[in-house]
Length: 478
Image (cartoon, rainbow, N blue to C red):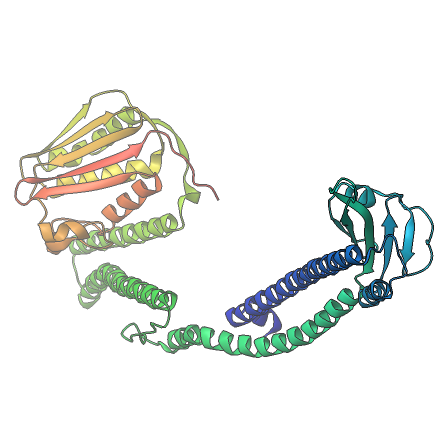
């Protein structure tokens, strides 16, 4: 398989979708989990520090620490908390003076800050500075006033602790997460390859089965793994049926063309051989036979001309020369030209125009199409008989109705009359000439004009063709 073809393969795309989904999910989950763990650990550290400092504040009250800062128990506890939390602890009295500093830096100095002032209002304060990664906890130390008996704030414990240990822990967890993620990705790549192969296998079976079909009679195996594969198989069966019908139509068309083209040639061959076998044939016989030969040549030429016209029409509307035409005048010219044929067949041509109609059309092609219908009405008519042409229109479409008093068409043949070379039982009559292509050309011409043609008939009473064409021709895009 070429590289470009492989990149377009369904299997590769399934594989990539699964891998990308796993990588994205793992990355998002790892990032979210890492951030969540870090936040929870910081919150837990703040809660622990606050609780420990409150316990220490309670013990200070019992040891009367603000009047005797030399208490070894309290100082030892403050030193222990400073070590455990990798931070610094200050004890500030009512005069905002630092009386204890575990770092011995600010001892005796004054500390006035927002946290301290809020604590003297009786409130505990906690804060986390993300930039410096430090936690600050300020807890008031209360005691009872000997004179008034009221609870007052005797001082404040202000503690600050680094979160480096937390970051080291979370970084270590993150590194382990990366290792687990890489292992997971490796495993998922293997699973993705397997899943991609399994998911693409039904499509490969369908493709292989389609490639092995050599005739229209063969059936594809049922591949019902997915709804999509079953739909592909069903669509293939429908396409195969259409191709089979098309192939049968093509074979029938070729057979009909061969028959129609060979018939005049066979007649010419018979007439020529008859003349050659008669050495002293009279001049009148020569003239008679040459007239028959000329008629057969004309018939051959007519068939070839009609076939070429159908071939041109099958290529689409590219050869259309559309212009605005006065349909009333067009119909008058057609009926005038067909008048001699109608009179010879004792058929009255009746033209009824209910209004003036102008429409966009290819005048030459539409003249031929309408002439074909009217000629058929004259040829397959009773003697005497009639053919009525009625023209009407609304604001959007013109309607042309051509009805006759002829022999009619059997119901079983109505669906075939627009097929090429189809002439029904009438084609066996030597008295009625024609190629069997006229109505096929007519239908193709009307369809190229974005119109429609319908036919209804009653055997023994006559036939009616109804043609509907848009007044304005709109060329298809592209």
